[in-house]
Length: 318
Image 1 (cartoon, rainbow, N blue to C red):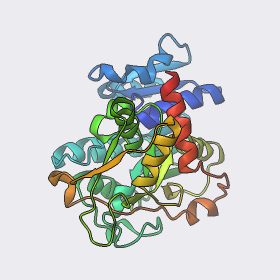
Image 2: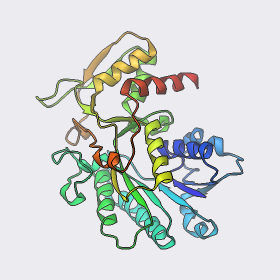
Image 3: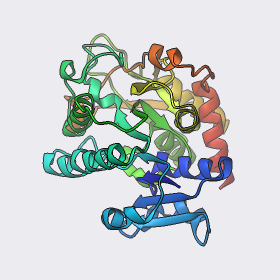
Image 4: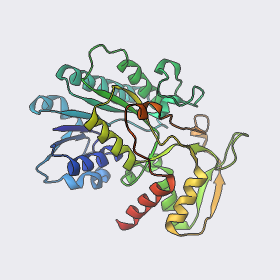
């Protein structure tokens, strides 16, 4: 049985469906399934499925000894980069993660968890996954919580038999509609263009970036799921890995790709970046993939245009 936390969320829900279709393993899905009924679309496929068991997050620890777990994907976390309540991140992103790691180390269960590219802060140290957490300066409590857990992991003497942390860059794809403001720009662009025929992007507030030239390493959830599954099957060297495409692309390119996928003429304007995120806004991210490639992952990534077209096609067919 494979345990997946955050299973009502975006990436974990897609991973669960993929593992269900492509492995013979039963699944133990863990999340707060009650509090967010809007997420049910992500896990409705598992209802009355004999190979799937769902557990409320707070019930995991008492129920865990009743299951034979072959691997853990710990993808549950509080991911709101605009939230500044450190206690919430300490509880959900650090304390819960340490407890699950410790269980996997004691029981010798492979453990794969979500870190984040937010650990890199403004990128002053680059985006190299060989950089130690102590050298990084995240820009918000969410990034701090992920970096703090990475740092703790690297100090542990007793570890799971195989483990990996994944610094997710800007993941987009079908199944993220419940994320609201934190959903990808692809999702927001799709809805804006469908409803109004136009899209607004943030102005640049730095002289070295033109409006719309702010760039991210946008990675399709399809590629993310493929990599997570590859780690489960191949058990490469335990470490913390970047998970992006290795190529930064401007928000302007992304928005143009959505217009093209919808076959609607471009109509793009610019607005000021909101004050509550302006000082911590990243202008450039790009994953260095040498470590991922060095352990044998050789598959190509979807281009931004391919990934957006796949995503828009799925949105239009549902």
